[in-house]
Image 1 (cartoon, one colour):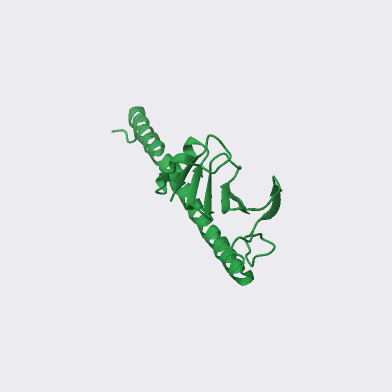
Image 2 (cartoon, one colour):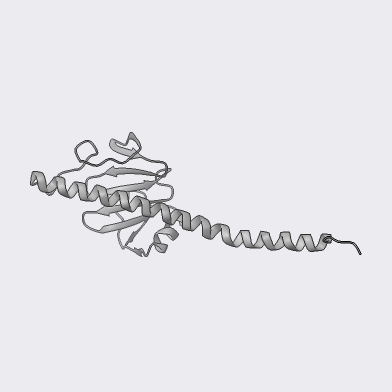
Length: 158
């Protein structure tokens, strides 16, 4: 008697592995992206805390923040985009803006941004369908107004 597998048996195994991979890969990608947002929220919270401490120290609740003034260090490269000083890491570009602190997923304005806004609190802005789905998966509730300058963006309050 011959030992081994027939061609049909091998094809069935390859087909089953292919189906499992097709189901698991999108879920894996989504989980990895959600873990990246957790890293961004940690950095945003540190930036927000440093800004609040700075505002208390100088007694000006409307003072703008910057990486140069605040005692916070985010590892990354210093860049300037549209006149805004940014700190770019592998996945995000962090910035202090006039009324919010932002972490834009790189490449900028293509996926999503995470912000801590003076008025709206924690907000996720989805620029693409993928970004909007991610914002919803973080528990975001669509806002009536979106403060993003990108017209196709949807804002979600977290």
